[in-house]
Length: 115
Length: 112
Image (cartoon, rainbow over all chains, first blue to last red; front, top):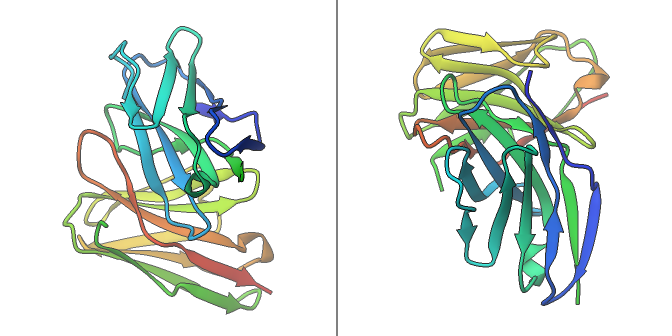
């Protein structure tokens, strides 16, 4: 079974600084997607960024980028120029390309932004 | 936002009573999911559906059942609620092969 591990229950960063959230996963498959979701206090789940495992290039979305290391099964999220609105729970997730598209989530990292 | 409505948004119930949570979508997506969110565990899959009347179990399905008689509705039933089922329940939908799930706003369920 696939598992996703986020080893940092909590992280904090100064506003305008850069922070990196860690995620590792375990799978024997070669074709899959990886995601980072953000959950602000409103409880809404918001997709931040997506990475296809067959792509070597790291995905980026504005201030958000990933460091995808397939051999190491690592998928970290870097947030540059942190803003107060970035404060949230962040979840790493995995799913196979084939099949029922169900996501497997990590435990989450709570990110605090210090003004 | 994807057209997903969960009802109720909050519910308090007593141990041993049956509870049904409803997820309604207006996107005509094929796949629908029920997750529960608990501190320290992230989101865990309870059941999912890959079409009308086609459902399967997730990793934490004990004590839960589901039904999908129409594309737009996916019901989650707790046959006899227990305190361990106190949680936030999320419905999600998916259609694109790109794999993104769209989530509802969640239902906070408290079992006393």
